[in-house]
Length: 115
Length: 108
Image (tube, chains in turn cyan, yellow):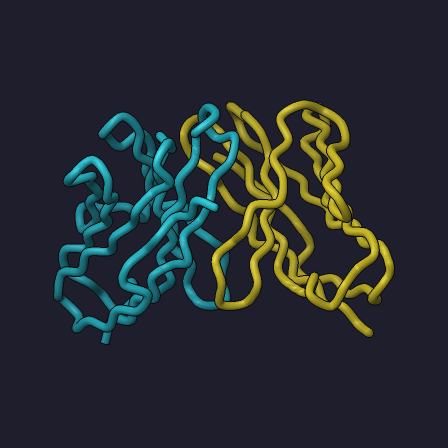
């Protein structure tokens, strides 16, 4: 069964460092999302990406965040200068193989710890 | 903006039936997802409702009333493995917005 793959599964970084989280979407999917979940809290929308550009982003997704599909396959989330409060589980989700928002499948997540 | 409400916690007994409600207020509503999330894991897709009515999928059913801004997830023949959080999420435009989730505890 096709699945969304995220790497790394865990990342520990020092405050102020840049991190790149990677996602390999399901192959025929057209819509890509990043979410984060702080421990014990709800899943929060960060950004959606369609047709090689950002289609929606939340207030959380400020200038420190960026997304791209560098090789038409991987979908990456970059945090330029990490803060302690960026510590969370980051989930990539992809969907839209049968049209926008008909299904969205999540990767297993990257646990980011900023120290 | 959008507002999604669901109970924080519920408890039910193995073998019983439980209904988890979700109410929402959002402009530009497209449809509503239910996801299951076990602790420390990713959400997994359960259902997606666009039209009014009930959709059944095995032990799980999901209902939507667009006019009332209301959905529920019905779980039958509860099993211990159903202990998890259940996330209601609405879609508008190109984003999916999640509620805070309902943590379901199953008692033997």
